[in-house]
Length: 303
Image: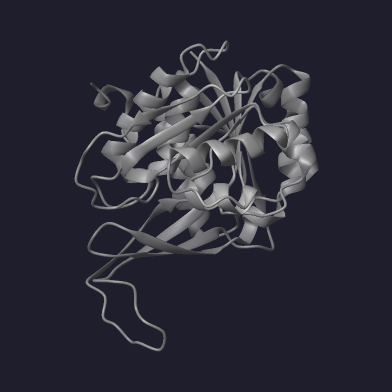
Protein backbone atom coordinates (compact mmCIF):
# COMPACT_ATOMS: atom_id res chain seq x y z
CA UNK A 1 0.00 0.00 0.00
CA UNK A 2 1.34 3.42 -0.96
CA UNK A 3 2.04 5.96 1.77
CA UNK A 4 0.98 9.50 0.94
CA UNK A 5 1.29 12.67 3.02
CA UNK A 6 -0.73 15.78 2.21
CA UNK A 7 0.18 19.20 3.60
CA UNK A 8 -2.76 21.48 3.07
CA UNK A 9 -5.97 23.26 3.85
CA UNK A 10 -9.24 22.39 5.55
CA UNK A 11 -12.35 24.40 4.71
CA UNK A 12 -16.06 24.17 5.37
CA UNK A 13 -17.69 24.76 1.98
CA UNK A 14 -20.92 26.73 1.69
CA UNK A 15 -22.30 26.03 -1.79
CA UNK A 16 -24.67 28.61 -3.28
CA UNK A 17 -26.61 27.28 -6.28
CA UNK A 18 -27.40 30.06 -8.75
CA UNK A 19 -28.52 30.37 -12.38
CA UNK A 20 -25.41 32.32 -13.40
CA UNK A 21 -22.78 34.56 -11.86
CA UNK A 22 -24.27 37.94 -10.84
CA UNK A 23 -23.28 41.13 -12.63
CA UNK A 24 -21.63 43.97 -10.64
CA UNK A 25 -24.26 45.55 -8.39
CA UNK A 26 -26.86 42.88 -9.18
CA UNK A 27 -28.95 41.13 -6.52
CA UNK A 28 -29.96 37.54 -7.30
CA UNK A 29 -31.94 34.80 -5.60
CA UNK A 30 -30.31 31.41 -4.96
CA UNK A 31 -31.89 28.12 -5.99
CA UNK A 32 -30.38 26.24 -3.08
CA UNK A 33 -27.68 26.30 -0.37
CA UNK A 34 -25.70 23.44 1.17
CA UNK A 35 -22.71 22.89 3.46
CA UNK A 36 -19.98 20.27 3.01
CA UNK A 37 -16.38 19.52 3.86
CA UNK A 38 -13.73 20.99 1.54
CA UNK A 39 -10.35 22.67 1.21
CA UNK A 40 -7.85 21.63 -1.47
CA UNK A 41 -5.63 19.83 1.01
CA UNK A 42 -8.48 17.94 2.64
CA UNK A 43 -9.98 17.05 -0.74
CA UNK A 44 -6.66 15.67 -2.00
CA UNK A 45 -6.10 13.71 1.20
CA UNK A 46 -9.62 12.23 1.01
CA UNK A 47 -9.06 11.35 -2.66
CA UNK A 48 -5.76 9.61 -1.85
CA UNK A 49 -7.22 7.58 1.01
CA UNK A 50 -10.30 6.60 -1.02
CA UNK A 51 -7.96 5.56 -3.84
CA UNK A 52 -6.54 2.98 -1.44
CA UNK A 53 -3.43 4.71 -0.11
CA UNK A 54 -2.33 4.95 3.52
CA UNK A 55 -2.68 8.72 3.87
CA UNK A 56 -1.54 11.20 6.53
CA UNK A 57 -2.65 14.82 6.70
CA UNK A 58 -0.69 17.83 7.98
CA UNK A 59 -3.14 20.67 8.62
CA UNK A 60 -4.66 23.09 11.14
CA UNK A 61 -8.20 23.69 12.29
CA UNK A 62 -9.90 26.14 14.62
CA UNK A 63 -11.43 25.40 17.99
CA UNK A 64 -15.00 25.37 16.67
CA UNK A 65 -17.91 23.20 15.52
CA UNK A 66 -16.65 23.25 11.95
CA UNK A 67 -13.47 21.52 13.13
CA UNK A 68 -15.49 18.76 14.82
CA UNK A 69 -17.44 18.18 11.61
CA UNK A 70 -14.27 17.87 9.55
CA UNK A 71 -12.41 15.63 12.00
CA UNK A 72 -15.34 13.21 12.07
CA UNK A 73 -15.28 13.11 8.26
CA UNK A 74 -11.55 12.34 8.21
CA UNK A 75 -11.82 9.58 10.79
CA UNK A 76 -14.72 7.96 8.95
CA UNK A 77 -12.50 7.69 5.87
CA UNK A 78 -9.54 6.31 7.80
CA UNK A 79 -7.33 9.34 7.23
CA UNK A 80 -4.41 9.66 9.67
CA UNK A 81 -4.95 12.95 11.53
CA UNK A 82 -2.08 12.72 14.03
CA UNK A 83 -0.63 15.91 12.54
CA UNK A 84 -3.87 17.91 12.32
CA UNK A 85 -3.53 20.48 15.10
CA UNK A 86 -5.73 23.21 16.61
CA UNK A 87 -5.11 26.95 16.41
CA UNK A 88 -7.01 28.52 19.33
CA UNK A 89 -7.13 32.00 17.80
CA UNK A 90 -8.09 31.41 14.16
CA UNK A 91 -11.28 29.72 13.01
CA UNK A 92 -11.44 26.72 10.71
CA UNK A 93 -11.09 27.77 7.07
CA UNK A 94 -14.18 28.49 5.01
CA UNK A 95 -15.02 28.61 1.32
CA UNK A 96 -18.06 30.13 -0.38
CA UNK A 97 -18.77 28.49 -3.74
CA UNK A 98 -20.97 30.09 -6.39
CA UNK A 99 -22.19 27.21 -8.54
CA UNK A 100 -24.08 27.94 -11.76
CA UNK A 101 -26.51 25.75 -13.71
CA UNK A 102 -23.77 24.52 -16.04
CA UNK A 103 -21.65 23.11 -13.22
CA UNK A 104 -19.03 25.88 -13.32
CA UNK A 105 -17.96 27.51 -10.07
CA UNK A 106 -16.32 30.59 -8.61
CA UNK A 107 -14.87 30.30 -5.10
CA UNK A 108 -14.15 32.80 -2.29
CA UNK A 109 -11.88 31.60 0.53
CA UNK A 110 -11.32 32.62 4.15
CA UNK A 111 -7.97 31.06 5.10
CA UNK A 112 -8.40 31.02 8.88
CA UNK A 113 -6.32 28.37 10.64
CA UNK A 114 -4.89 27.22 7.29
CA UNK A 115 -2.76 30.36 7.23
CA UNK A 116 -1.22 29.67 10.65
CA UNK A 117 0.67 26.50 9.65
CA UNK A 118 4.37 27.00 10.45
CA UNK A 119 7.66 25.32 9.60
CA UNK A 120 7.63 23.97 13.17
CA UNK A 121 4.33 22.21 12.47
CA UNK A 122 5.99 20.61 9.46
CA UNK A 123 9.08 19.61 11.44
CA UNK A 124 6.80 17.98 14.01
CA UNK A 125 5.49 15.79 11.18
CA UNK A 126 8.91 14.98 9.72
CA UNK A 127 8.67 11.26 10.53
CA UNK A 128 5.47 10.91 8.51
CA UNK A 129 7.01 12.77 5.57
CA UNK A 130 10.30 10.84 5.59
CA UNK A 131 8.46 7.48 5.58
CA UNK A 132 6.09 8.41 2.71
CA UNK A 133 6.19 7.51 -0.97
CA UNK A 134 4.75 10.87 -1.99
CA UNK A 135 4.14 14.33 -0.50
CA UNK A 136 1.46 16.67 -1.91
CA UNK A 137 1.02 20.40 -1.17
CA UNK A 138 -0.98 23.38 -2.51
CA UNK A 139 -1.00 27.16 -2.00
CA UNK A 140 -3.83 27.37 0.55
CA UNK A 141 -1.17 27.13 3.28
CA UNK A 142 1.94 29.34 3.80
CA UNK A 143 4.77 28.82 1.31
CA UNK A 144 7.55 28.58 3.96
CA UNK A 145 5.80 25.51 5.40
CA UNK A 146 5.62 23.94 1.92
CA UNK A 147 9.32 24.58 1.29
CA UNK A 148 10.23 23.01 4.63
CA UNK A 149 8.11 19.93 3.90
CA UNK A 150 9.63 19.51 0.42
CA UNK A 151 13.14 19.79 1.88
CA UNK A 152 12.38 16.94 4.27
CA UNK A 153 10.84 14.93 1.44
CA UNK A 154 13.78 15.35 -0.94
CA UNK A 155 16.27 14.47 1.81
CA UNK A 156 14.43 11.14 2.10
CA UNK A 157 13.83 10.42 -1.62
CA UNK A 158 10.10 11.12 -1.32
CA UNK A 159 8.28 12.19 -4.51
CA UNK A 160 6.98 15.78 -4.30
CA UNK A 161 3.83 17.01 -6.05
CA UNK A 162 3.01 20.73 -6.03
CA UNK A 163 -0.50 21.82 -6.93
CA UNK A 164 0.06 25.57 -7.57
CA UNK A 165 -3.46 26.59 -6.64
CA UNK A 166 -4.84 29.13 -6.08
CA UNK A 167 -2.86 30.70 -8.94
CA UNK A 168 0.28 32.41 -7.73
CA UNK A 169 2.96 34.47 -9.47
CA UNK A 170 6.59 34.55 -8.39
CA UNK A 171 6.77 31.09 -6.87
CA UNK A 172 10.14 30.84 -5.06
CA UNK A 173 12.75 29.17 -7.26
CA UNK A 174 13.83 27.17 -4.21
CA UNK A 175 10.40 25.52 -4.09
CA UNK A 176 10.27 24.78 -7.81
CA UNK A 177 13.67 23.08 -7.67
CA UNK A 178 12.33 20.83 -4.90
CA UNK A 179 9.27 19.91 -7.00
CA UNK A 180 9.20 16.62 -8.90
CA UNK A 181 5.73 17.09 -10.40
CA UNK A 182 3.75 20.33 -10.77
CA UNK A 183 0.03 20.21 -11.63
CA UNK A 184 -1.33 23.61 -12.74
CA UNK A 185 -4.49 24.19 -14.73
CA UNK A 186 -4.42 26.63 -17.66
CA UNK A 187 -4.88 29.73 -15.46
CA UNK A 188 -2.20 28.66 -13.00
CA UNK A 189 0.23 27.75 -15.78
CA UNK A 190 -0.18 31.24 -17.24
CA UNK A 191 0.35 32.86 -13.81
CA UNK A 192 3.61 30.95 -13.37
CA UNK A 193 5.04 31.38 -16.88
CA UNK A 194 3.23 34.30 -18.54
CA UNK A 195 2.23 31.97 -21.39
CA UNK A 196 -1.49 31.96 -22.22
CA UNK A 197 -2.41 28.29 -22.50
CA UNK A 198 -4.85 27.76 -25.38
CA UNK A 199 -3.53 24.74 -27.33
CA UNK A 200 -0.87 22.03 -27.30
CA UNK A 201 1.86 24.35 -28.57
CA UNK A 202 1.27 26.86 -25.76
CA UNK A 203 1.08 24.02 -23.23
CA UNK A 204 4.49 22.84 -24.36
CA UNK A 205 5.87 26.38 -24.22
CA UNK A 206 4.58 26.84 -20.67
CA UNK A 207 5.90 23.43 -19.65
CA UNK A 208 9.35 24.21 -21.07
CA UNK A 209 9.47 27.38 -18.98
CA UNK A 210 8.59 25.41 -15.85
CA UNK A 211 11.31 22.88 -16.66
CA UNK A 212 13.76 25.79 -16.91
CA UNK A 213 12.63 26.89 -13.44
CA UNK A 214 13.68 23.51 -12.07
CA UNK A 215 10.53 21.33 -12.18
CA UNK A 216 10.97 17.73 -13.32
CA UNK A 217 7.52 16.79 -14.65
CA UNK A 218 4.77 19.23 -15.69
CA UNK A 219 1.12 18.15 -15.83
CA UNK A 220 -1.30 20.80 -17.10
CA UNK A 221 -4.95 19.92 -16.49
CA UNK A 222 -7.43 21.38 -18.96
CA UNK A 223 -10.80 20.48 -17.48
CA UNK A 224 -13.13 18.50 -19.72
CA UNK A 225 -10.42 18.05 -22.37
CA UNK A 226 -8.00 16.08 -20.20
CA UNK A 227 -4.41 16.60 -19.13
CA UNK A 228 -1.08 17.38 -20.83
CA UNK A 229 2.26 16.09 -19.59
CA UNK A 230 5.85 17.08 -20.29
CA UNK A 231 9.00 15.35 -19.04
CA UNK A 232 12.48 16.74 -18.38
CA UNK A 233 13.74 15.35 -21.68
CA UNK A 234 11.00 17.48 -23.31
CA UNK A 235 9.00 14.48 -24.49
CA UNK A 236 5.30 15.17 -24.02
CA UNK A 237 1.79 13.87 -24.59
CA UNK A 238 -1.88 14.31 -23.83
CA UNK A 239 -4.33 12.06 -21.96
CA UNK A 240 -7.95 12.65 -22.93
CA UNK A 241 -10.68 13.14 -20.36
CA UNK A 242 -13.69 10.84 -20.07
CA UNK A 243 -16.79 12.44 -21.56
CA UNK A 244 -19.55 12.94 -18.99
CA UNK A 245 -22.19 15.55 -18.16
CA UNK A 246 -20.67 17.79 -15.47
CA UNK A 247 -22.96 18.85 -12.63
CA UNK A 248 -20.31 20.46 -10.38
CA UNK A 249 -16.57 20.73 -11.10
CA UNK A 250 -15.67 21.38 -7.43
CA UNK A 251 -12.88 19.02 -6.25
CA UNK A 252 -12.32 17.54 -9.74
CA UNK A 253 -8.70 18.73 -9.82
CA UNK A 254 -8.15 17.59 -6.23
CA UNK A 255 -9.52 14.15 -7.07
CA UNK A 256 -7.14 13.97 -10.03
CA UNK A 257 -4.12 14.73 -7.83
CA UNK A 258 -5.03 12.34 -5.01
CA UNK A 259 -5.68 9.50 -7.44
CA UNK A 260 -2.59 10.29 -9.50
CA UNK A 261 -0.36 10.06 -6.42
CA UNK A 262 -1.97 6.80 -5.38
CA UNK A 263 -1.29 5.18 -8.77
CA UNK A 264 2.21 6.41 -9.68
CA UNK A 265 5.09 3.95 -9.50
CA UNK A 266 8.23 5.14 -7.75
CA UNK A 267 10.05 4.96 -11.11
CA UNK A 268 7.25 7.06 -12.72
CA UNK A 269 7.16 4.55 -15.58
CA UNK A 270 3.33 4.46 -15.58
CA UNK A 271 2.64 8.20 -15.82
CA UNK A 272 0.10 7.98 -18.66
CA UNK A 273 -1.75 5.10 -17.01
CA UNK A 274 -1.88 6.92 -13.68
CA UNK A 275 -3.17 10.07 -15.40
CA UNK A 276 -5.85 8.08 -17.20
CA UNK A 277 -7.01 6.49 -13.95
CA UNK A 278 -7.01 9.91 -12.26
CA UNK A 279 -9.01 11.37 -15.17
CA UNK A 280 -11.59 8.61 -14.71
CA UNK A 281 -11.90 9.37 -10.99
CA UNK A 282 -12.35 13.08 -11.76
CA UNK A 283 -15.07 12.29 -14.30
CA UNK A 284 -17.04 10.66 -11.48
CA UNK A 285 -16.49 13.61 -9.13
CA UNK A 286 -18.01 16.15 -11.54
CA UNK A 287 -21.24 14.19 -11.83
CA UNK A 288 -22.29 15.02 -8.27
CA UNK A 289 -22.66 18.29 -6.36
CA UNK A 290 -20.22 19.10 -3.56
CA UNK A 291 -16.57 18.48 -2.79
CA UNK A 292 -15.61 15.57 -0.54
CA UNK A 293 -18.95 13.79 -0.83
CA UNK A 294 -18.44 13.58 -4.61
CA UNK A 295 -14.95 12.02 -4.49
CA UNK A 296 -15.24 8.35 -5.52
CA UNK A 297 -13.84 5.24 -3.86
CA UNK A 298 -11.37 3.03 -5.70
CA UNK A 299 -13.93 0.33 -6.50
CA UNK A 300 -16.09 2.92 -8.30
CA UNK A 301 -13.31 3.87 -10.71
CA UNK A 302 -13.59 1.27 -13.44
CA UNK A 303 -12.83 1.39 -17.15
